[in-house]
Image (cartoon, rainbow, N blue to C red; front, side, top):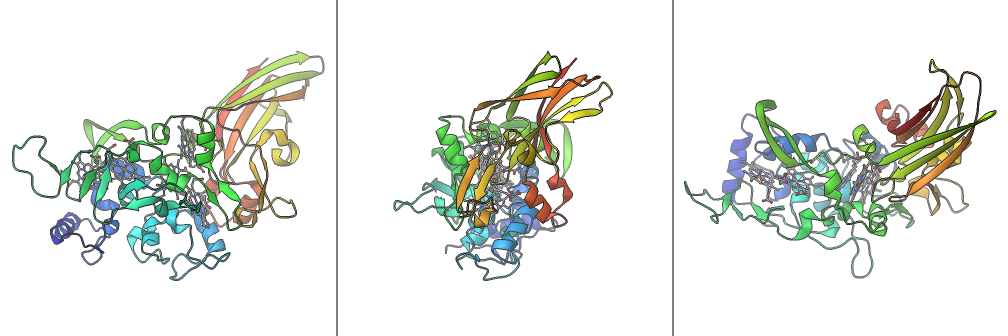
Length: 424
Ligand code: HEC
Ligand code: HEC
Ligand code: HEC
Ligand code: HEC
Ligand code: HEC
């Protein structure tokens, strides 16, 4: 493996003096050992966005939900030599959730900061080309296997040529621009197209070949052409930061590296549009509800236990609930108001992702789908408000029960994705 030139390493050593960073002069050898804190120095706004993202928290040591699953299907994320229980092979999970560890074929995620950093700056910015998410023989290429990876240089979207050499005072374009860490402009569509996401987000099946995630297929079936980045990494103008402090009056425009999704209460409100019409007919109020998925992928998409449900309720003028469309959960009491993927075992009984051999049903909203739901609500005396709420959940009810006490309660709380109401 090529080593980074020693002057670069010493530049890093300088950068890190006094920052108490995890980087040390012994480790680098591959650009993958360069910590995100090295980028923070100059890309502080992007660093802060990324730090709070699920990419930065994707490893089993940082994401409590992934961590719980990983311990179940593989083992201790702080042990070396862990294999998947199902096939006794290197845990495929790490190819997407801890790419730096997977590149080194290691499983002890606390051995190096780069391993527990999850999908870090260098993970994405060392991709130089997309191979596709399947080999010529039709074998899935997952995570790092789907990309050509440069061990010695970063890649960026602009196509600008950079140099690590000092650029002479007063020099003008096209003199290469200085970048302390080796960096190549990558004019290929890679960073501007879905390719930069698809290696990890296209699809994933469990050991039985049952598809657990198929965001890529959903998107292609929708025949949409809006790139993932236009919603998930849109340009945002944010206050300029220096050493954690806001520089008053100064802003920068960057591609939003917080890549918000299901964990973000604001993001989940962007996917659904809801309308509600009512018609009072004697003893009943006929309510017609429509929900429309604004997205070019399913709502919800991603992990198979993402789901949402609709609560429809009647209230009196003081907000006291008089009627509701379910008792325990719509999955049990009002299936048309539950939007989820039902995975099944060979006997056709609903089961958890690692055991699933088939998909029994998919009631999630398909890309751009509009669906109507109708209710006959008792027109009880005093009924003043009919309200419908779409509530997004990271986990299905049985999983919440299993994980209670093992993950923060915050992750169990449904988020309001959309609402509509009629007042009489
Ligand atoms: C000493 C300052 C400095 C450090 C450290 C630094 N960068 Fe940069 N970087 C810049 C400047 C300046 C630019 C050009 C202006 C811009 O796009 O912000 C740039 C541009 C980039 C670009 C855009 C490339 C393009 O033209 O398409 C990427 C990607 C990038 N840096 C990634 C990183 C990563 C990842 C790290 C950490 C491993 C890092 N940088 C560390 C200063 C730095
Ligand atoms: C190297 C693999 C990899 C690449 C490349 C990648 N992701 Fe991810 N992404 C992940 C993993 C792993 C997670 C799950 C983290 C977790 O929840 O543990 C994730 C999570 C997400 C989420 C969900 C956030 C949430 O709130 O749950 C979104 C949205 C997302 N990625 C968007 C993108 C977009 C857009 C791109 C392309 C610009 C991209 N990702 C590229 C691996 C990747
Ligand atoms: C999930 C993959 C992914 C990760 C992780 C990631 N980037 Fe990026 N980065 C991108 C993509 C894609 C673009 C291009 C966005 C666009 O132009 O639409 C980009 C653009 C940039 C740019 C160009 C300037 C801009 O705002 O467009 C810089 C600088 C940059 N990234 C730095 C970083 C740093 C620093 C980190 C870590 C703190 C990081 N990136 C982590 C995918 C990633
Ligand atoms: C029109 C805007 C838009 C586009 C384009 C888009 N998304 Fe999303 N995406 C959203 C919104 C809003 C959510 C939150 C609601 C949800 O989870 O469905 C979301 C959620 C997600 C999640 C979160 C799943 C989770 O488990 O938390 C992932 C992953 C994701 N998108 C990946 C992608 C990928 C990959 C692409 C490109 C192929 C893409 N998205 C294109 C708007 C968009
Ligand atoms: C092809 C890449 C890929 C592989 C391989 C992969 N994952 Fe993921 N995983 C993702 C992405 C991307 C997300 C987040 C977006 C979404 O919901 O799809 C995710 C999300 C998850 C989540 C939800 C995390 C949360 O915060 O709610 C769990 C749990 C999970 N993965 C477990 C695993 C386990 C266990 C393995 C190995 C058996 C594995 N994954 C293999 C890409 C992958």
